[in-house]
Image (cartoon, rainbow, N blue to C red; front, side, top):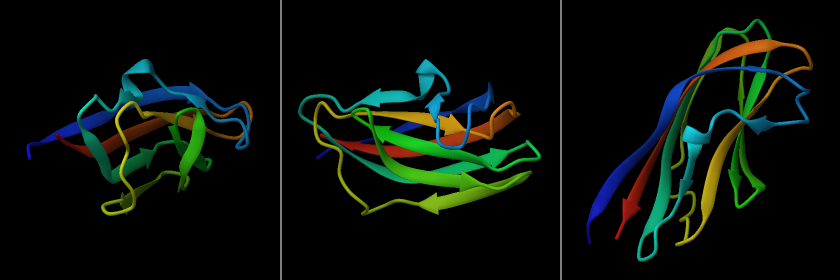
Length: 116
């Protein structure tokens, strides 16, 4: 078996539409598991420069998979290893939410391992 690390990462600014209204941050924060492989999320690290709570939402095939609240001017590190496998064809995307009207900047680093 061959394993390949994959990373969805960067610094992104967005305007909140409400904590209950997550939306995609950037097309670069999307990944589809290739045929013949299984992928496992390993960790999520995130920082929030805003003075308000933001929430990152890991979406799988258009549905929420995990919620990651990131406190005001704070950071978080969540180990995800052994949580669950993503099967071939599964698509994940990182969305973000903040209170309506809040302009937030987040630093995100989602680590994945693709096994084929």
